[in-house]
Figure 1 (cartoon, rainbow, N blue to C red):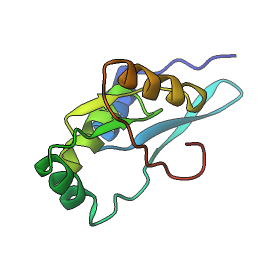
Figure 2: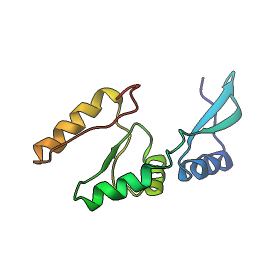
Figure 3: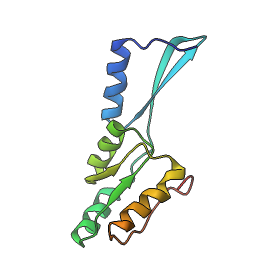
Length: 115
């Protein structure tokens, strides 16, 4: 069964996503009983690395399975302006090929879990 998500909870979810967290709703027997906001910590050197690469003329893209709101929030924190969100792990290679078809040379860095 599906739970109804009240407007107040929906707004709270959006607030979490705007902070770069993924909102997870918890239900028991179709009744909404809780919400969690989870996030991977951003490495301290991420922003300066992005800035350095961009300064070298390298275009930095973030390709992520996160939703667009969360993805944009995380990208903003580290200075990435090119974002591809809601990309399943199996489709990330396809996104790399699309960039290559545009004539870009692509190097990819992943978390080693599903990239």
